[in-house]
Length: 423
Image (tube, rainbow, N blue to C red):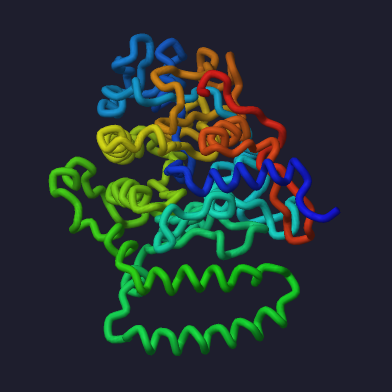
């Protein structure tokens, strides 16, 4: 007999429920890898050549301390979870790949990856959950281009196809969301012409990447004929007091890295509120091989303002239980301070901060040794964090599979289980 087997029926039932859920994710990629021991894991007993210039301050959770440059996050630590024992970066190369996928690999090199490459969590959410509003993209990436391409990545669609990739409204693209002089009739004419071109392109394409063109263009035209996305991106619609609370930061890229744009935190909240499932933003350039402490003073206070405003705002609007927030970089930094007052790459351990999404917050997970160089307790792999995120989104990452371009099914994580401390 034909039809779906029981496991397929159960999965289809689960996915139908996912599309009706309110769950979303905001991910902040801290480009260049922040120094974990100068943020959430200060080591006051380490030798002076490792300890650094900053002092810990207490938070509103007894026993948890953070850097003195993070006073706003300290006040809401009951709503957060610092992870002090994150690992999983394959080497010391700068790449946002593991932050977006939880997989071992590279944004620039697909060696060892399935046909089409691993999809980011935003693409997976777009595929399995879709948008809560047809006129709002499921996956939005706020990062502008960067001199080092992985620093400007919002997460790639991989084998799921470009129609599940991030919609990127940065720069001049925002102006294209308004029809201006073109009326709906002319838009329909162009839509028909585009469809005929795309039919030819699909006939010529044998990779499978063109399969989603119809869905992609349907959503694009829907955005043009609706004002919802433009309204979500228009911060002039926001309460001035809320805008002041988030702040502006600096919209210019830091070197070959990302901007320190605090308005991106507010845009992320507005987009999720409007119906987006996943919003990613890239913040700063934390690759402090020299002048680590000067770099921290220019980055950490802005990061503290933007992230704390976002977390508090989500709670005040009743969105926190349905919106996961993750902030992290690709690895940590060396315990030893180098001759240029910097910290170098250290893939053996790093840190992260999680909030919202129904997680058990107000705790710290993991520990490092006296110098902050080795994991001393509860190692946490990127894959475990992803398994946890997917669980809170309503997705069983060890049961749901997605097919690559050759038709081969893949699990979303490599056997990692959700973190028992958080769920």
